[in-house]
Image (cartoon, rainbow, N blue to C red):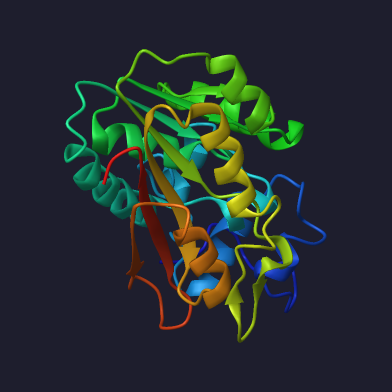
Length: 260
């Protein structure tokens, strides 16, 4: 499909480097969102979120900054993650569940997890003020029932107190930054903060509860960092979603705490 406006940006390539660089905090036009999808994945509709293609969510008043276009979990991936988390959650024999997205960003993953799981609530924490303000406006424009809070995940968890739900499902996807490297893949020890550190904080606060962790991965993960994470749990599994070209797919580390 044609993009929404002529190419007025010369030969500038809309890729991860550009959107996490000079356009990191800049709100993108519809053309730029579609061009990022086209240049990076051969699909102008790649950044589909909240159940809509870019042209449709843009028409509803949804906006994204450069970093969010890169870091958000798009619909196709979020839906698959939600399906697999829901399948495992059903084995937890819980009457009710709470979804907590510790690094919520756009809030799209929290939306899909709640939708797939049928959770009673979805709460997301986002510390970055710019990302939070844009995402809060988007969720309001779409009328989505995600409780987005402008807090660091530690403060947010403390504020939850003792959730009444039987099962707490935690989505862990801290910013990757330089943790994703060509050749070696994603080093979970180098995310900001490191994934294992996040798990340790959560279990120190909620370790007496039945928990289900869902950690977003890349197709290639530094083996020692994954082994270090898996050693913390009685049960875990890894899945890769083959929805991009080989070498550019995302995956999921799923693990239980307090039940196997």
